Structures are given as C-alpha cells and as structure tokens.
Image 1 (cartoon, rainbow, N blue to C red):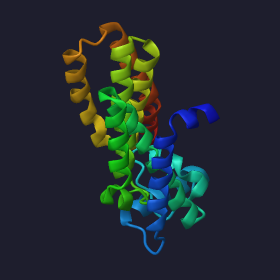
Image 2: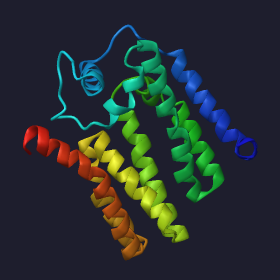
Image 3: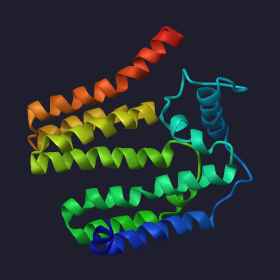
Image 4: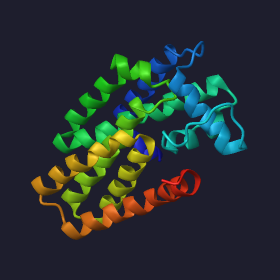
Length: 214
C-alpha cells in the first residue's frame, strides 16, 4: 500500500485536497427533502420503523450505504464527503487512458469544481452517480484495452450498482453499446459482463415483486 501511495503521490495529495475543501464547507444545519427520504428509507431497512418510506420509488443502494451513519448528522455528512471524493481516483483512472498528465489535470479540476464540492456532502445520488458511472466506463475501457474478462466483470458490477443507485443511470446502456461497437469489444465478454450486471440487479426486482407486486 505504501509503495502504491509513493508511486501515485500526486493523485493522493489531490484526493486529500478534495476532502479538505469539502470539509471546509461542511454544513449540518439543514437537510433537503430528498435527503430525509433516503435517511428514512435507511431507518426502515435497519429497524423496520420509519415515519415515511419511499422504497417503491427510489432504489436501495444509497440507503443501504448510509445505514451505519444515520444516527449522527456529522458522520453522515463526512461519510458522503469521503465517498464522493473517491471520484478523484475514478476520473484519474479514466482520463489516464489519454496520458498520465491528462489524468492528473482531470482529477485536480474535479477536486476544485464548485458544484461537486457543494453536492459531495448531500445524502443524494447526484454526485455519487458520477463516481459509479465513471468507474463503469473506466473498467469497460480497461477491459477492451487489456482484453481481460475481470475488467469486463467489474464494469458489469458497477453498471448494476449505478442503476441501483439511481434509475435514470440506465442511460449508461445505450452509451455503452456505442462504446462496445466503436472499439470492437469482445462480444462474449460483453455478454458475460451484462449477465453479471443483471444477476446483481435481480434481487432488487424480486424484492419489488414480493413487496409491491411489480
């Protein structure tokens, strides 16, 4: 781990900068309505009791992720900040396909981007979707380049997680189809990765059918 940090010292420094900038603007004085819904969904999942629940309208992933932190507003905000700041590594991973310098610049620009700084503390899916979508595309691009099934599978996993985070992230599918055709992706590995994505999503479909009948 120490060797990895030394090798990529600059990107780790940018990651720390991203966290510090987001902590600097930390505010626990209010929560948006959407945030309270995700938090109450978390309470319902963990305790079976909540004043209001919208499990049938919102996918489960964000509510599942924040369960350990819902008792403390400050810990909840800090968790979201750290989780969203990981996007620095994700964009570096993707942009480095065009050169290490491009990756570093992209990561730095994200670290200081005002809207991302502001949205990173929210218990919402907006900035978090960026992290999952970027990882999805990154692993598929890596898989196409190195022709390894493992990268395709990771792409499929993050594709499913992206949709479990926010339904509208399904827009990734047509974008990925264009990517597969343009870069002549392995048909067998692509199908296998999409099967993995579907199997990861299947429990949520079963949950909806059992509890809501659709």
